[in-house]
Image (cartoon, rainbow, N blue to C red):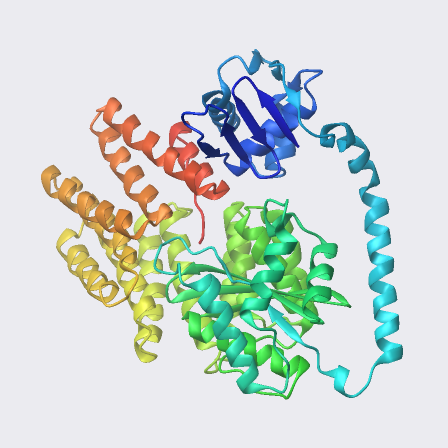
Amino acid sequence: MRFRFENKEVDLTQGKVYSLDAQSGQSYDIRAKTLQVMEMLVHNRDRVVTKQELLDSVWGDLVVQEQVLVQSIKEVRDLLGADTIKTFPKLGYRWVATIEVKDTASRLWVARKTNQLLVGTVLCLIVICGVYLGVINSTSAQLLPKVAFLPVENAMPDEIHDWVPIKGMDQLSRSLRQQSELKVSDVDDVLLAVERANKGSNSNAAFGPHYFFQLQQRLGAQLIVQTRLTGYPQDLQLHYTLHSQFGPQQGVVLASSVDNAFDELIGILTHKFGQAVQPSTEYYHSAFSNQAFAKGVNAYLQRDYDAAINLFRSALIEQPDMLAARRYLAGSLANIYELEQAMSILRGSLKIADTSLSQKEHLRANLMIGYLLINWPQDSDRQQELDKAEQYISRAKNLAQSSQDKLFIAYSYEELGKIKRLQGHYSEATRLLLAALEYHQSFHGRYGQTAALIELARIAIAQEELEEAKRYFAQAKQIADDSKAHPNQIWVLLAQADMYRDLNEQTLALEHAQQALEVAYRADSPLLIARVEAWFAQVPIHTVN
């Protein structure tokens, strides 16, 4: 839908505001959540839309503060003027500006919503017919599908992985050609097909089965591979969806590097569709378990922990020894404060036979138990609780050292340093944190150093060395800013806000927390927004990453 308002034109499909002023001719992007709020108000401009309706429609089941809605309303008013939306105190908001609709989309909106079920049914019939015809006409040559890789969606919180979308797509295409008999669409052909299919649409995420059916027809490919890279350097997740005539199948690869993640995905594809090639790292053989696990990880990242718990438990019914699913299940339970259940699952993971493939999960389980004991105090004897945490994290460090896993050696040193800080052993804490820094400095992604620098700043605060603390904070902030790592920028800003609040310098505390909130909104991350809002509400929020 496009509409005009005064000297501006708004395209709700593209998410843009265009200035019709001949002198400026500028355009402005509308943030995703703000766009959804604007769209709902415009389509319901004949009435007041309640705050709860907006929160439920735009943020779904996510638990967010009303401030996120207030921010979106402010952004609309900043773009289009203060008189576009009227606030009805304690009720909600109504779009009051007169607009000139440039197309009939708004009149068709209700009908489109009503007809979605019918369209979905027709598409399902098309897919079923395609399957039927494919079975009838299959030959030995058709048993090997032609594969097309879409650009890799880069969801890494930094700028050092900006190369991933196109180069990653090319790397996957070349590797599959080299390691299998499968035909693979050329990168240029895929990009052209995607460009044509995307015309008039905002993002791939908005497309359903018909979009992938279109790509299959344009490319003559029976299998479209959609991927998304997320996580942190040395600890990555490559989510994949395989779109074929039999419907989408999801999975996730856990790896220490982008190359390893790509290699494992190629191994999965060749094992499933072409000549069997053993992937370089572990993957889960059960399609059902891996699909449930992948959906669970997506729910976890959206903070929908109840859904994540059900999905991880479903995966574990078929594969009770899937240690990664057990770890994510424990994390989900911890995030809803079911600490005893989380601990029990992690301790159970430690009893599963130790192999070369499970060693890293045993390392993670030890580290996670220690992390929970540090950050979710439960025992009346705090000293005893910290001693237990130290035992688990020391085991994790020993496992990391035996496998030369530098990332988890660094993590272990960080947590041990935090324990010593909480115990008041500042010299020992400093020594451990400097060791963690030394390991982090060997990685390409520098922003891993920020956690250790924040801890060093907290030690300086405890010793009333405020200038030293500010120096550590400045160093951490510079690294996070240089890397454009939104989560790390927020951790530094909130740690600084904590310092100023404890010093009773409320103005400075609020300034830093407000900066953190702005970063969270720019990142458009429900997790980060919730974390900053918890600071304003002065309530604890613990999250297992």
